[in-house]
Length: 387
Image (cartoon, helix red, strand yellow):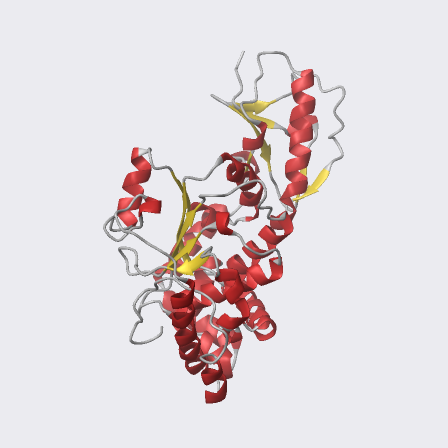
């Protein structure tokens, strides 16, 4: 008899059915569990929404199912770790035309100018900040995020423009979020990666506030600042996350994590090159097992877990960073000390630069330099022009 390794749920269409004969497991081969006696299970009429932000329901149902199966199955069937349940689309349920869609995507990628022109035409006339925002590089990012589908890219971009018109991320000033940066839990580094990309350093163990809205606003501000300081021709940034000091007392609600991921994925597509999660503790790994289901596949692939004693992890770090510039907290040789006051002055200078870039009047630009400065850490050298 086959010794099963893990449980897999087949996802098809908008909903997922869980009758006895539609449950699959994967080991040396995949087969229906028709031989199982599931007398106590009532999954034949269960319908679960297969939407990105409703997967917690799916996970909860899966756990219930695994618990039921474990109680009814013989000892030859073993589920290694129920939390590591993977959601896949099995070959037999693959949508027709998927290979054709892949070919179409490759064709679109070979003709980016055509798609860019189509998207720009579909958007219609732009003015003001929308015109500044919608560069060719910007349009390309949205097309890539939607696999070069012009209609989907247009919808996504229009939603971003609507979000920016209400949230106004370009108008956030350092003095509004400076209290969030007092401990150095999030700042722009004074070095770049091997590709010249801006680096945001995050230290969740240094959390010092309780307002989730302000925390998100602080992250958005730093995202905008990192983008403002990208060199010409570069669209992506890098995240370095240090988990030192993270404990059970630092509680991040799932809703906040979901809202944060939604903003980053939907309104900053293709901005993240890689996120390095350096030596995460078990407490975070448990949190990650839930949060990862909110990530789209492209973003998920950019998240890298790095462990200092792992050879592959060390090689990964060397591929992205010069160890002479990398802080010791991340396995490098450099010494880094966050100075809140110095960082505040640098952010005030960037606020002036941002105001000029977005076309604010001089009063708003100069006001950024007269506010209460409250932050600090060395940042990357200023580029001569803003892409």
